[in-house]
Picture 1: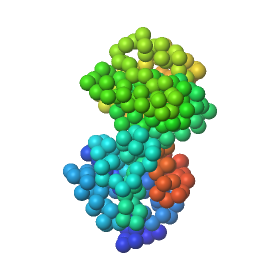
Picture 2 (picture 1 turned 90 degrees about the horizontal axis):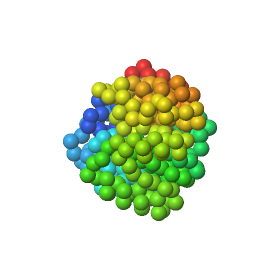
Picture 3 (picture 1 turned 180 degrees about the horizontal axis):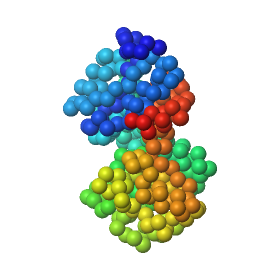
Picture 4 (picture 1 turned 135 degrees about the horizontal axis):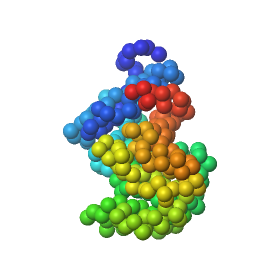
Length: 286
């Protein structure tokens, strides 16, 4: 592998606004170097997503990831979409093949695969899911497709609640999973759902930035019978994860979701098994 990109180097990218803080370039470039793959991964912040995707296709890019705010908008520019991504109405992975662009979504599967690694079953499980954004919708869709019995979705009340309820109802009819939506301010419902569930997943921004000292689940509600996952990976150990560990629960840090979805991306693009130790070290060092 040449130390510098050249005419035949495969090019991958992340598209987002902003994309400057993404860990993906560090992760994927470290894997490419380690495995001797002639590829490079860069970051772009396009103002026009459609033109950006068309340009990447014309220039011969091999693949890309999408982050906020492009995951749903991208659907209108693609030649084909996986069943999972269509169900989620969101794409986080692009593949460029034979002049066509295809979309997939690895977010939900990435996190649920990491939860399975703790010897926690998704099929038949009852899950508390905090959030209704792109990460949350990926998780509830994948969980339903993977046979979860119940997914209790909680978020602060907002005007989109009726549309989200309709989405959950349609998915429930299709999969047989019971999907319900609640106001996270309803403490009685939240506490009851936590007691009913074996898995708790935070897919909100609570736990990062100015909310780094906050959690939506009181520590007293978490037991050793829970598996607790957090999509937030900065800080690496959120308050939710720290308190879950103190309670004896199994935990999945946010960095595991990042690694899990990246591993599926590399399998889609290159057919390789991502070396987790290399990818994790690159993320932690960046």
